[in-house]
Length: 231
Image (cartoon, rainbow, N blue to C red):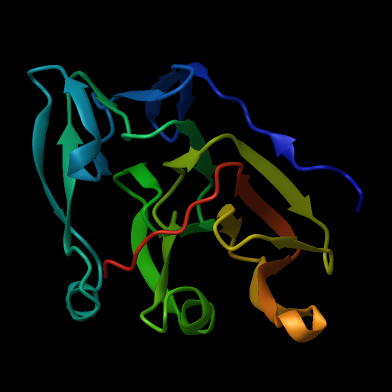
C-alpha cells in the first residue's frame, strides 16, 4: 500500500501491439510516429506533425453521433491509413504514454489528453456532474472512454510533465489533485472529497481532491492541468 507511483517509460522504439508498430521519442515535446501500413489510426487533427505523402487522411464517424452533438462534442475524428508513417506531437512539454488494451479492456481518460488510437478502439464519453460542479462552475467535466471491443488495440495519451502510474489493490485508495490525474482503469472508482480548512477570523478555503479506489491502475501527470470548459 505504501508503494510510490512509478514513472512510465518516456521513449519507445519499434514497439508492436494490436497490428501496429510505433515509436516515441523526444525529451521536452515528444513525438509519436506510427506505421499505418497495416492498421488505421484516428486522432485529433491539430496534432499532426508530419506524414508520408502516400498516407491518406479522411474522417471517421464516431459512435453515438446524436449524443455527441447534443453535448457539443465532435462527431468526427481524423483518420490515417497507409502505406507509410505518420507522426503526432501536442504543443506542450510532456510525456506520451501508449496504453495497450487487450480485447475487452476499457480505459477512462481525462478530457483533452487523447492523442490517437488504433481504428478498432471505440471512443465514447461520460459527463461527471459532481466533480464538474466544484471545478468548472457546474458546466461539466467529461471523461473520454475507450473500449477494445473488436480486438487488441492502443490508445496514446499526452500527459503534461511526466506520467506516473499507481496500481491500486482492491479497496486501496489514493487522493489526487483534480488536475493531476490522467487515466484510470474502468474498475477504479472515482469520487470527490472536500475538506474545509479554517483559520478562525481569517476565514478558510476548501481542499478538493479526487479519490480513486481500486482495484486497477490510475495515471498521474506531474504538471497538473485545469482546462477551461469548452464542451
